[in-house]
Image 1 (cartoon, rainbow, N blue to C red):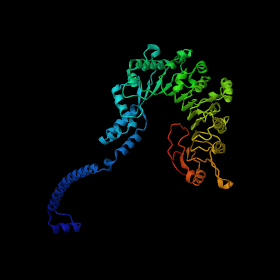
Image 2 (cartoon, rainbow, N blue to C red):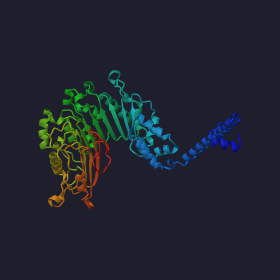
Image 3 (cartoon, one colour):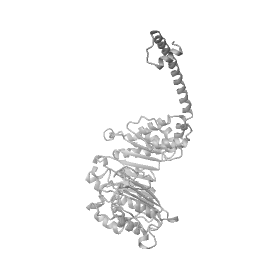
Image 4 (cartoon, one colour):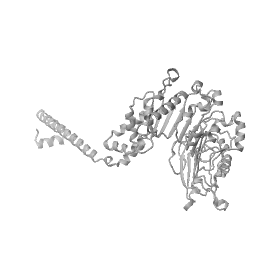
Amino acid sequence: MPSSTELIRLLSENSPPTPLQASELRERISELDARLAVLDVLASDIERDRAQYNAILSPIRRIPLEVIGEIIATAVPTTLKDHHSRQRLIELCTVSRDWCNAAHCLPELWRGIILKIYTTRLAYSKVAAWLRRAGSLTRMVLCHQSGNRCLCDRTGNCVMKSALVAKLLFEDPPIDHLTLNVDSIRCLKAFFDLYHAETAANTSASSLSSLSLYLRSGTPDDWMEPNVPSQSVFTKLPPVTSLELRFPQLHNIAQDIAENYGPHLTDAQLSRLTDFSIGWDWINTKFFSVLRRCINVVTLTISFNRCDSMREPALIPSLVELSSQPIRLPSVRTLRLMNMDGSLLEYIVTPKLMHLHLNIDGDLDDGTVDVPHLLTHFITRSDITHTINSIRIDQLSCSSWDLRQALYQLPSLTHLVLVDPLNFNSIFTDPYTTGLPDTQFPALTHLELHAMPTSYDPITVTRYLSLRKGPRACLLSFSYMRHREVTSTEPYPPVNYYPPRELGET
């Protein structure tokens, strides 16, 4: 190794080292490289240990179980969980013991399950273990026949007679709500027969209180049923208090069936119902017969499947009679009219109504139905001017002024929701330009405007609402349009303020 004097001289000038000096320098470089390699290993070990200690001190380990639970609930938001949602939830439970405990502390994560009757390989013990975690919450099960058509018309063996379905009905844990997607009347009859056979064989009654039936097939042979009401398959309906019926759409049904068929529900079955939902656009008057007997229904939902059945010539004589003698629904407090033009309001009376939801189908709204006028007439005839609390209207295309005239003097209207309105400006007038006392919407405390066009500027609405003080203060929830399609179940988060954003922003 060169002396320090020689090394300083070599560093301060450009003279090349002697062969001996070069050899000694290369040897020294090799020694330093070896020392660096050892230090690199030590540094890697130190970095690894430091990362492990930091991980132990990570703030995520101190997140409360309640927050972790909310994260899991956001990641798996559906109530009824299919195979993929269940797998996702199980994956989140394997993150750590805390994540697993947090998931088990949220009973709403476990209260619903979707089963494919054709292909399910789940043992009942696993289904029961899943649902038991729901605790005291109502449990919901959806059973459908996968993508395969049931062969009961050929083999006589229906998938609805499965042992899994039977155990769901009567064994622990109790099932409160059951949804069935069935192919035909035969499958529906098989389920009803199974229910009554299990009822006779079990000492304890079924806990089933709510039933949803989605009837899919439009093939005429699948709807062959006795014309005698007492022999109808619907006479075997379980004694539930909440019932949802969804019939095949009109364009999937043979004309002779659509004109003559209707669910033969008995007076006893209908009088037992407090919650009734029906999706039916078939052209016959049996629908009105069903409505007339809903004397104890508190929550009523009617969907016309985006069909203009009320305009069919065959119904005109019945509609003329109903306009003078409307159907009285004495117990209804919540009414939802979905996927229609709103003309049904002319033929019903609801003296106890508190909550109204109108979902106007834009494809049916050709301007021939004056919804604000119908709404005013409906409220007056039902005598609910002083009792109706909330109104929601989706996709209404009338002017803001017409809608205002129908609603602005309702003394008990506290909550108004408008979703995807067309031709909308403002339902408020400026009281300071008229010099008159401000009496519009006297009880309104919450106004929601959702799926608004991106060109809409809510400054007029916000300016007026800012002037309402004290007991007249009103909360505004606002969001811009994400897309034109709006469903009744889509959540609209409260988003305040302006100016207009780009499409897709809120």
